[in-house]
Length: 168
Image 1 (tube, rainbow, N blue to C red):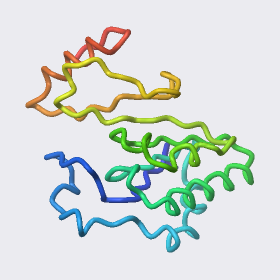
Image 2: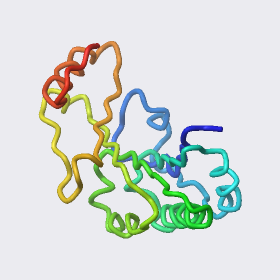
Image 3: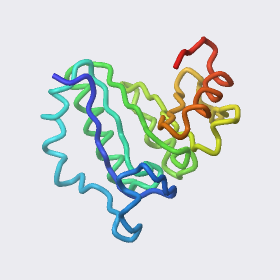
């Protein structure tokens, strides 16, 4: 049994990070996952998670086809209702998702708690992290990719943004 299930729904992204596996793929060749083909497998995959937590990732999830994201969330929501459980979904985004026209539509399911993991670019590591408007600070987690060449910047980011002491 797994703690959570990561589903990568797209390789599309509007950033080009050197450490990302998708950055070597030309944008025109990047695709969304075919959710219709995997939709029958999703409930079986959900059976493998305890506690029930789902991570929706990409690329950038704000660029995912609306139907693919909606179908995945609907299947997960129905699974949670059927099994009388409270689900959790973590959206991994660089912030584009909050500006997508279907952002509010995909946060409507009552039986799912949402967390937003926002990727912080290296160029923003020396700045105060700004939480998206209309979302509780408790629901937002900054995500920083730590590498040898940005360790000092990560330390500064943590000192600026964390309310508790963090030792690296």
